[in-house]
Length: 364
Image 1 (cartoon, rainbow, N blue to C red):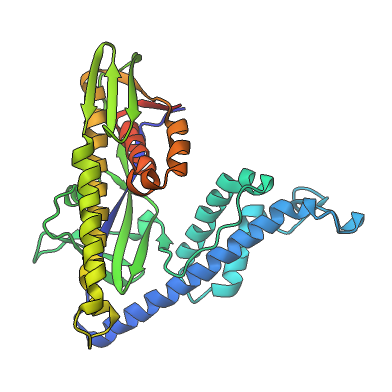
Image 2: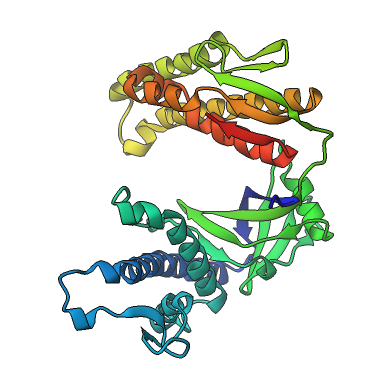
């Protein structure tokens, strides 16, 4: 059954709101410790879930060792002393209880069980290996842990998380982050399970918000057929009308121009003045890497937004991406297309914008 809400995640830079140097250092030390525990605990949870799922397939065990994976209190033949979901939480509690808030442990357990259940079919078929989490993975927590308040000195916001004070940094904010935070502050939208990420010493709040879907007058029998290609990023046909969104010169050539500039800087980097280390010599190269990522992301957002706006204007309740699967297979074999044409990124942006607008997306 379709829901009337959608979960959106916004990445917001935050700072520890403390002027005392010693306290701030202690807060950061605590956060880094928690991050390490989350990383190790996540690998533990997924390993135990995988073993439990596949214990019945251990054909090299003795017959009398093959047992039923169930709570013994509810099923006499079961070998567990608790529910299956609670087994991995007990593992986390055994290793980390008292060193990390229980709310974080609970969210690690729930999110990873959900992840495991999503991939279990692929694990069973041998199509996918068990996930291995990195040390930089975010620290998850429930939405009730965040209590937002206005910052009296600026247009930013303050909040406390496990008794650690934070404040947001929104800058010029050309996006909708400030508006969404203000709506969350006054209770118009709900804050869901979110996470805190540490990247190269910087803190980012990955804030998940539950928003109502926008109501548009759409007709399901009106179908928009969209085709993705290199010549024109999106070509959409609705009834007898055809629209082209973007062109090769705007997207592909501009991206290749950024790459060419990056290659020139890369060749010249060998002659840069030394003495300040490798990071200093390659600083300009890193800037062009970010330029390309930023440019591609902004173009894909623009193209997907225009596609959805076109569908809404024509009251198209169904969006069909034509021959998308076959095009992705062709792109995998073509090194140039694989490097320069972001099929998957564009489809994902179309998917979530269509869901927000209440448009049914079908991918052929």
